[in-house]
Image (cartoon, rainbow, N blue to C red; front, side, top):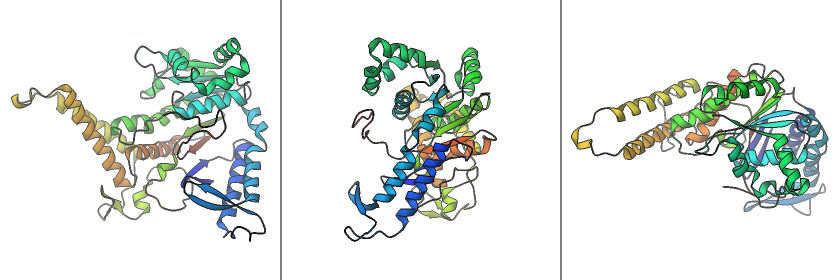
Length: 385
């Protein structure tokens, strides 16, 4: 099912084996989209009532009946969602990022009877996972309404009972979990929500593939070992649609998919057509190997003996040059296959790997578009970054 927000498609890939509210949401959104395809009449002439909704600088006609149908589908049976989440054990990545923080707060507000949430957090400097939870998540105004609901001491007790910070690292196999944390998670986790990502458009190619392509794979490997798993949710981005134009069928990327091939052209760094090697599909595993190989070669070159004219070159300058070359490589590979930058390219690769390796794991892929300030909850205008 596909929807548009701020002119960008926002989508959900929902397996039919999932809960009723997920299917109801998809069905309502599809009905809303179908209603929009009919040519609406001007204001004052539409007998089925047409309102105008402002999106950015544009006004678009939108039928009241369609809005009501969509709203009813989304909010009419939220009790089913709450019921599904009651007494569940959830694993969440990316909780120090804005999107996952909002999800976490909403989860605790709507379903305080969730059993517990394991938050996989990378230690940073002297701040371990628990310190980062307290300073970068719980201390924020985002959680003020929960403080008011539970009171000072009650809030602290509630958070301690529900949130379990777990040190980890999505950049390594096994997600960097200790044996005891791995055992606790795999024995109890029922829902895995993967929201962590590198969102820099011009990230080093090796860093981007390690986080955005291999990160989802590592979380999928963890999910496969959870004996009570009900569903895995992967947060992608609407911009994985790359250089596509117009309405697109919403399907997860599969190994071999290439937007450049869809457009029947190769895209060079200037966005021009290049007829060479048109049939090459995107192999995410080959791109990962290329990124790591290039990083190793560059590191070896930087470590090799230098001539006297280069002896004074600082290590800082060498690292800067290395970063620039790996950024350029990622950008070139992205544009070759029809994506505009390394971020969206590697996020699409992550979807490909999940599609290829999910087997029997039920996966929901969420593709948010532009993130704006909150309309109402937890408070109007709330945003970060």
